[in-house]
Length: 316
Image (cartoon, rainbow, N blue to C red; front, side):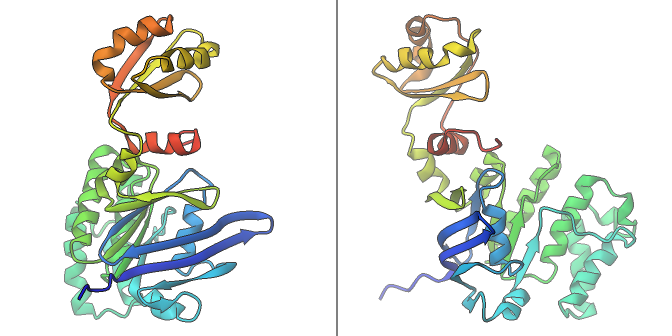
């Protein structure tokens, strides 16, 4: 007998309207328990509104959802007990120390003092903050505050965690510390929902992900499945001296049988997808009949998937 797959989150035609703005316009999700699930999209796409609804901060306009088996509208208090939320905006009390901030959240969740004291030091150590545990957080750098914000969301060991841009503004070293922490927390069988603008972050961490644009889901799959949509070709990015000629350059390149597609990037760059593109750059240069410079060759990325689906970069 096949065991029924259990879902941490199921949504059915979930919508959120603000007057005439359809921020979330009919989203259906099934997120398995124990997974790390990425939600991607440009600013204003509806991803943060979706997270705010699923984490009980906002009420949906219509549709329904179950969170850890509880109805989103009928059982909000039960859901709140079982989830953790790390918002994009820092939620830290500047006149408290790092240790006191974590203790406060633990007390709000009704955790016994003997349980959260040891847990607090363990968490601070994992984020390299133990040596500043008794410093007022108003003296912390932005990166230290961001890492503390993550710890405050997990002190009660929730079954389901929402991370909304958890590494925004972090330097590469701190970002990796947070990534390792998130991976380790998921290994304890918690379900993690991650929204991010970082394609590297989404690719490295996510078991599966959904791309949202204009309030609708436009693609869902594992990172490899989504990148596979674009095939096996190399992506060749380059600039030309006259940006007004970019469409002509793309059309000339596409006359080569191994060039699958081409798109403009931003105000200056062009990207071509070509089978065996790395060894055929000289042929492409001859075909487009203009000087190509600042050339890079790489495999498909999640950002390429987004460009293919929407015609714009994720950060625009």
